[in-house]
Image 1 (cartoon, rainbow, N blue to C red):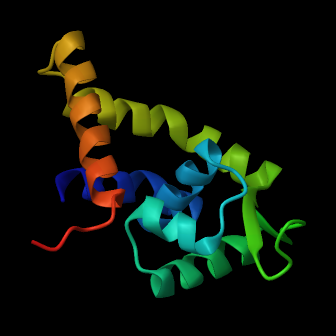
Image 2 (cartoon, rainbow, N blue to C red; image 1 turned 180 degrees about the vertical axis):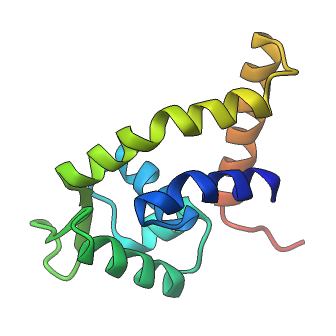
Length: 130
């Protein structure tokens, strides 16, 4: 919650929420996602993502286009304005990250990153019923 509060203070002046910022950063790493994929990667419900996508599209930060392989599917990518907004936030977000992890060594940061990736992959796997 502390990190979220700090992020909110950084992104709010740019006219976006933390959830919208998260979606933009996911799209930066994975352009061409569907709304459902973006929701999963951003840790929000599909319903919440619809509102986020609508707001980002109306702000001109993302484009939605039909997938050539599946005409029922819309893919989402950043616009140049979306890329510019992320660049404008980058230094402040990097500063928050540096402060949050200042007590960790470089090796500990790599280990933490690996643990978080492992946790994400474990949660993406189909749930097993015991």
